[in-house]
Image 1: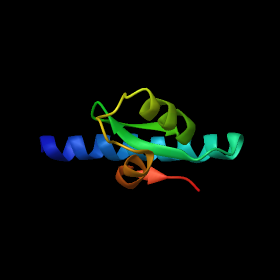
Image 2: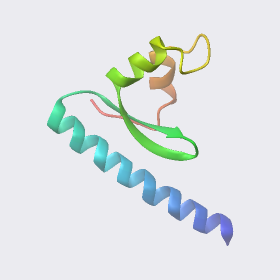
Image 3: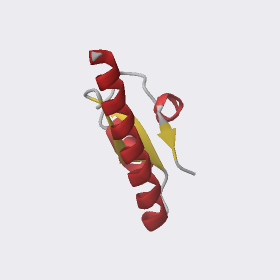
Image 4: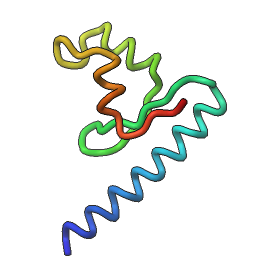
Length: 76
């Protein structure tokens, strides 16, 4: 029962993040990713991902393409 509730909450958060990503992409024209951050799906732009990779925020050797492959959702 607890797992069902967790799955429902995750599904709700994921759907909200996807809607936000599509909306922001429509406004800015930038590619948006939905990635997991601290156990929650968050929306982040590809430009921000590039700066985070350049400042070594992610593990050594991690590239933008790796993050794009692991993303839950990517806008066009």
